[in-house]
Image (tube, rainbow, N blue to C red; front, side, top):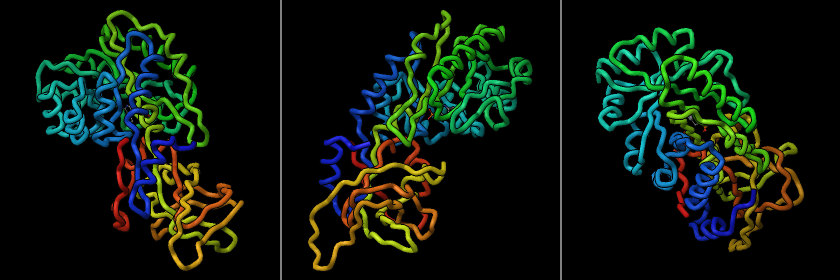
Length: 371
Ligand SMILES: *Cc1c(COP(=O)(O)O)cnc(C)c1O
């Protein structure tokens, strides 16, 4: 994926060596608009803050979505500062302090266990909550499955009756987030329809059915999940159907750029060694794939000594950390790469900076540029 001209312009104006995330707030807003057009009507669109909690990203998405989904007290604070119209709060290990902060702020809580229901009832008797359920047989294909399999998320469906019987809380619906990075839109629509059918079959007359996020992007190509099958999902009257995607809203609005400090070949492999690496963008190392990049040529070379350069060859894009695991991409063919050029990695607006181990080796953080 080539960066658009305004992103290239922003990168060209940065101090050298370039090391930056560029977040494009116009792209965020237009993506949210596209998602909204494809969702069933009526539905609520919330953005999952954990994908990218940068305040400017949150401000853009807080205004273009119906609300924000948070999973910690820290995210709750950010979401409120961003002006979220509505907030829902999930997570398997909420502390009493986090629950109280959320309850005080009028946030909708997705309770994840029978024990948590008891705790909420004790903290705020009579409060309405949504119950997260890990249903049997509800698995979807994707990079992470969170339901229909053993996970710490939600109550096992065999405990549904026990959960519904907890005194002191009113369960008004279900949270059924099931997967991350699903690429099959038809399967996703079928999952949503099944989630609605199941929720109505529980006998509680649900006012909320939250089907979570999980809309996927394919990091190895330009493809994303086709959302159009979702628009034909029929929403039962009186049900607030909530979607809370993270990756799909934020991925394409982020660009990670890192300048090539050195180019070298050892034992037959060629490396472009970057001012940057997996401590800024951990996703390819965490998931074990090669994240594509484009070379942004920088022609100036003010130095008297020779410029390291290779042409028409596969290179590994590696970072500045002192570990052989600091690899963003292996074996990508380049027509040319030189020290001083900048590698630009697209689709890095979600689960990029936010999931990375920033302090390992204590290099300076990247610049954050908002366009
Ligand atoms: C992570 C998460 C999301 C967002 O998932 P994406 O795959 O980024 O769309 C939504 N809801 C919950 C409960 C989550 O944990």
